[in-house]
Length: 110
Image (cartoon, rainbow, N blue to C red; front, side, top):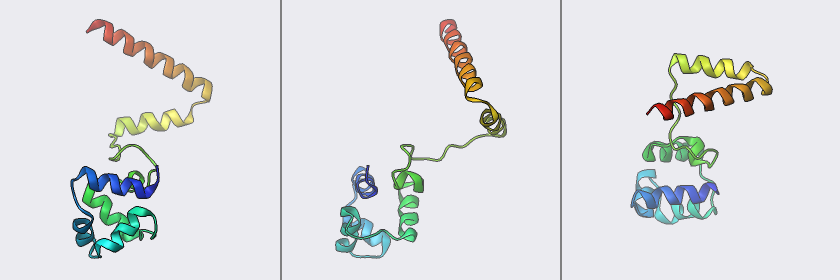
């Protein structure tokens, strides 16, 4: 998905007009419309403003992820991620299998 399509989709999902977003960005609707069409490069400072306005990450705004919000991990989860990163691909496969088995067992108990 193009970056410019994402900012248009966010605006439409928020039921906002180009004029309303342009006012927030302190620019004109015509100039903002060029961002959405990809005719003008969106300055980084304005990308930050839009991410804050829509409560999304810059990665989401740029189309680098499908997750609108950053993942928040507690200390225990961060430690698991660090351990995961040290594993070989074979070991990761084993862990994935074990997790799958544990989840299946949990679902059977419910």
